[in-house]
Image (cartoon, rainbow, N blue to C red; front, side):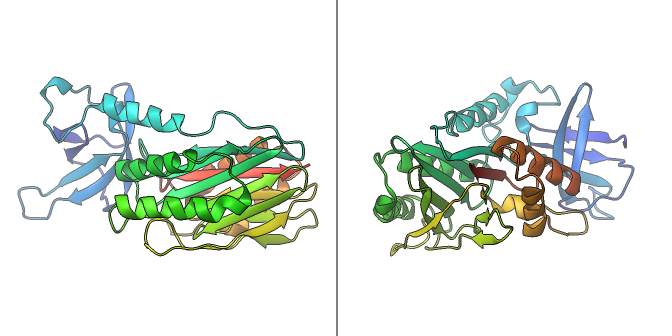
Length: 321
C-alpha cells in the first residue's frame, strides 16, 4: 500500500504525485479511495525536469465504479456517465445464454469474464431442435466498447437464422462474414468456432473460423485439436469454409476457449499455455462441466500475476456421458 497525492481526477482516470515507488507504463494498480476500490493502468509518466515530473497518469478499467464520488452533472461531453457503461455491461450480459437445451449424451457449461466493463468475447448455446445444440464461441479483435459493439452485431447476425444444421453452416457463416465485412471498419474481425452436436449420433459437425483450436481430451488420454477450417470473419470479402466432424465417446472432454485463457501471463511473461489447461482438464475430467470450469478459473487465478484483467476470458466445456 502506498499513499499518493491526487493532482486531478476524471471519470476515466487520475493524475497522481508523490508515489512511493517507481512505476512502469502498462502496469496495473489497485487504487482505493474511502470504501471504494478499482483497477487502473499506468498510461503515462512525467518526464524528469518537466512540469509533470514525479506525476503518474492512470486510466480506470472500470469507470462505472466512480470511486472518486464525482458529481457527474458537471461532466464533459467526452466523459460518458458511469451509469451508461454499467447499463451497457448489463445489456451485454443478457446476450450470453441463460438456458441450456437438454442433451442426453453431453453435459456442458460456459463462462465469460470480461477484462473491462464491456468486451468482445461471446459464447452461445443454440437450440437446434430435439437432441441438437449449437455451440458458438467467438473472440472479437480489440477490447472495450468497440469490441463489444461488434460482438453484439455478430450475435444478432447468428440469431437471425433459425433451423440451423451443420450442413447449413457454410451459408450461414458466409452471410455473417459479408455482413461484418460491409458494416465494420477494415481492421475489425472476429475468430469464431461453431459446432452442431447431435445426441443420436454423438457427432459434432463444426467450422473453425481462425479460432484457437478447441481441445478434445479423449478418454484414453490422447488429444484431438479442432483446427481451423476457414479464415476469420469480417476481414475479407471473398470467404469460404469447410465442415469437419468428430464423434464424442463417453468420458471425452471438449474445451472451447478464447486466447485470454492460454495467454494469461505472469510478471515474467510466462503464459498459462495449452499444457496447463490440459493438465486441469485431465485432473478434473470426472467432474461435471461446471466444476471443471471452476477449477480452470482457480488455476488461472493462482497463476496470473495480476488477476485484474489481461484479456477477456471465455471457456466452454462439454463432457460426453
